[in-house]
Structure formats: structure tokens, C-alpha cells
Image (cartoon, rainbow, N blue to C red; front, side, top):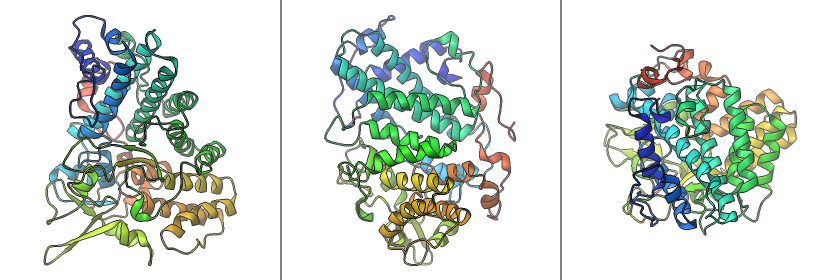
Length: 467
């Protein structure tokens, strides 16, 4: 696998990647990074972890890449937000480049499928290098070393989380050792989640409860907790999911719900973690690429009829979070959570984790445990903000469907939530097979392992349904 150094020039290229990443050459970042000349020998980590400033710049460099490199989590029209939304039932496609995702006819040769595999594994390798470098460096102060190790473990867990939800069984990579990594086979999903949970628990113990800057762009303890709550929900560990979500919800000094038109503002109190855009001419990739100013074409998308019809009458999210463009004959609707298409940088940041999701996690976890009243109370907090009356669901089955509906409307066009929800709840077949335009097969729930990785990976196998 390219990302774990099994291609022909693997070791040199991965060393170059980690050198490029950890040597802080991300000159397009919103912050100034220390520049280090590429070392010619094995002393990469010695130079990167020479002092507090260079080590901290390395982790900031990873966040800069997450938001500025097209694909994965950057919010561009190559990102998981766009393409997973097409795979689900959120968007309509207007381009052959999007059609494989929309029609659920992906092939293993699809370049974007490779991106969603390679990018997370590259970041995983980078975080492994950070963890190892921090452990071997006597020059980093102990408090900073703990914070950076916690952030690295969180990012590693986040990448494994997206990989396992996109591809199913995946290799678990926790070292930079070439001989170990090149022989890795796909680990069962439950083992991947065990690693994610272990990393997040480690991150919780290391990260500060407060943010290390005046902005919410570096993960803190609550960020790790938010992903841990989501992970417990996905794995059916309801009590743990409830407990983790509660620890964030109860921290009212840092987190609270805000009006719909303030949710996605930079550092809103709804924010648990955002990515700060690095360009000077836009706010977010989501705003730039979602907001329609002409008839959609190319990589543009519009909201599907299925999503639009799912809004209840009177839902203020349809007023505040859905925009429209009329071309003289047809009206196209688009996500309008981010209001600024270009200019005025610094007003909106790209949301990764927020409080609204934690209320819905706790609602679902409580419903699964039979706490109907508690689940309804959490659900109604989200509904009240949207101008809706309390839910009428009073038994577990109907309440779980009501929570699924609320997640669909609350979290649409955000980092692949709908796609993952349909799969983890076993509802993908029923929902997606009912959409006439789609060519849905049960095996479409997992993306194919990229063909290039199969050719180079010694112990890799393809997902069912793909060649």
C-alpha cells in the first residue's frame, strides 16, 4: 500500500512525506511554520523535535493539510462531505466525475476512492512519526509533549474511524516500522474500533480541558470525547456513549446551543472542533462549493428531492440552512449552513465536531437503553431550536426512527453523517434501493479497496462486489 510503504520506492517516498509534513513546509497555512531544510540522513525526527516550537509547528501543519489539501475532510467538492452525500440520498449529481458515487457504481480504479484511502493513511503515518519522535525527544517540555501526543492520538483515531466506515476491515497502522507495516493485512472492524477507542482514551488523558489557543482549532479533551461518544454509539456501547456525550453537554461554561445562523461561525459556542481555512480569499470550502450562483454543472451538487421532502413543515433549518438558485426555469436548492461563498475570511470555519451531534448521540443511546423520557428530552432540545414542537414518538421503535430523522436534517452535508448512519443502522438497503435513479446493491455500502493498493499490498483483499 502506498501509504504504508509497500510500493516500489515506498520507504524513500514515505520518508519524504513525513519529512514534508513534519518539516513544516506547509507554506499555505494560516499560521507561520518553522522551515527546516530536508535532512539527508536518518535524523528527521531529531530535527523536527528539536524544540517546542518545531514540534508544535508539526502538529499545526497536519491541520493545515487537513483543510487545504483537496479530498478527505477539507470540505471541497472532492471531500467526504460531498462524495458520501452523493452516495447517500443528500445530493444530486451533475457531472460524470460525481456519477459513480451518486449511482453507487464505484470502481476500484476511481481516483477519489484512492484519495480517501491514501490521505488518512498518510496522516496516520505522520502521527505515528510524531508519537515516536516525542517519546524519543528530551528537548520538548513535558506539558507540551503530553498535549501533542494527545492530539496525534486523536488524529490517528479520527483517520482510522473514517477508513473503517468507508472500507470496512482495514490495516491498523500504529508504527513507522517499514517491515511491520508492509505485511499488514485487513483487521476486522471490531479490532479497528478497539484501536480507535484505545487512542481516544489515551488522548483524553493527555489533552487539556481548555483550548490551547484562543480559537477552537486545536483538539482538546472534549474533542477526543466527542469522537469517543460517536464511536461508542457506532459500536452499540450505549451506556458509554451516553456518559461521554453527557460530559460534553454538561460543560456549559464551554459549550451551548446557539441560534441556527450562528452555529457555523468561527469559534461559536456550539463548536467542539473546527478546521481553520488557510486561504485569504474565502471562508470555507463548503461555502465556496455548495453555494450556487449559476445552474449547477461539473462538480457542483444540489440537494436531492428526498432530502428536501424530509423537512417538516415549519422547520426553521429549511429556512436558515437551505439556499436556492433560480435560473429562469428551474429552482435548485443547496446547503446554506455556510453563508459566505468568497471573501471576508475568518468569519466561518469548517465544522468537524459540534454540540448538536452530542445531544443526538445521547438521545439515541438513551433510547436504546429504554430511557424514553431522557431520549425525548435530548431530541426536543434540537427540535426546539429548529422551531418544531416536541416529538410525538413515545415508544422505542418510533423514537429511534425520529432520532434518525432528526440526524438526517440536523447533520446533512456535514462530513458524511447520513452515509454512515444509513450503514451503521442497517437501513441503507431499505432507503437507497427505493430511489429509482440509484443502482443500489447491498455490497455498495463499502467503497472498494483501491486497485493500486491491491496490486502493491502483500496481504490485502478486495471488498465483496468489486473486481
